[in-house]
Length: 554
Image 1 (cartoon, one colour):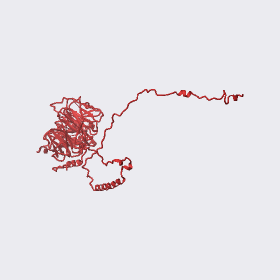
Image 2 (cartoon, one colour; image 1 turned 60 degrees about the vertical axis):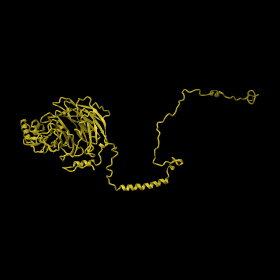
Image 3 (spheres, helix red, strand yellow; image 1 turned 30 degrees about the vertical axis):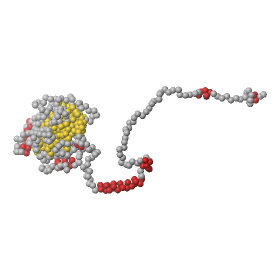
Image 4 (tube, helix red, strand yellow; image 1 turned 135 degrees about the horizontal axis):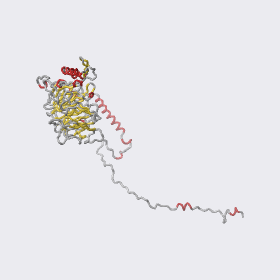
């Protein structure tokens, strides 16, 4: 038998097929025995949204099968067209009527974007008190040019003799992110009491301070200090009662008034070494009601000073005896060339000082001969020691109707050229027109008035401080008799010594009292935003002359 036949077909060597079982053994039987973590139970406990109920709708509610959220079934096209045609005729008729309306129809309506309709209110924004200051009252507060820094001057108000106090001027920058109300940002130490202070209108860091000794100090950002002299001729002899920055001859000057009855004009160019102009507060005959010779008239002590921002040299001075005097004080142009007179060459400032008195000029020339001078400057005039009563002339051109008590404050309106306000210890606050002697408006807060200031943004808003710790805000457009708001600055009824609006806006008002505390208020928009017809009404007041009828609100 052949081999091929042996393994083919049937028989013991026939071909057999053996099935593989290794895959079945590898798979085996699998099932989940257990989990490493337990199932986390969850449940809804509450929701963040509140239940809401529809109280009313402006459209008719569609119920039943007619309610559909799809666009085609949400509105009936034919009814919509009918409504639009009907409404368009009404709208067109109203628009045609509006073409004939006057342009000023809505002038009396309030601007809701600027005035929220709130009442005249004030909120305390800052409460400042220098914890390290001496136990002295604040005599004056002033804002710098940016309107963010407020300075307060400390000084006693009841000296019985020489001043033996040490005081300071403290400043806070309210624009900082973090403010410590009890810790000033800057402290300027002084050797005696400070009576008044005034920031420069353009340089935010330049501060002038009037002292009890009659000196004036200038402080800059580097804490450099410049002092005026204490001299019978070239300075004040009594405490400074008022300071004002004045722009004349295209440069800034500093005006001061004192109890010695003189108004002096200083310049920073000579380092306050001597004044460039001056005047004495000698009243006219009209002030007393009978004739008085100028050389026999008494000199009145100055108590307050204000310069008109629109008329160069025009000022109003309040006196210790209640007088309100209009003065004109100007200085010579520093750019003018020297003048040759006789054997001397006079500087422009020097010649202006002696121009009103021939005796003083001869006195200066004799002194120049003794000293061998050929050119006479302004400093040489004061070094010659002329009589103090003759060096400065009387600059009073008009005496307004006086107060009964001392004048504590005078302030010109920053928006109108002829309006100024005065307040006095007699309890009256008066609004004057500089062109007429009698006051336009007389206000009576009820207590002794200590300070009065105009709002920088509203023409007829005045803030007045009194002796009982209350600040009265008058809106003269609304009422000529009562204050629209009276706010208490303290709980001890301490006297308000100074009030001041921030120059940047009319919403920030600060006041200081005898306890050394400063309160800064944020006024409501109604007291800061100009109201309709207010400016026109104030202009009518400013143009009233003689005994014309005072315009009032219609």
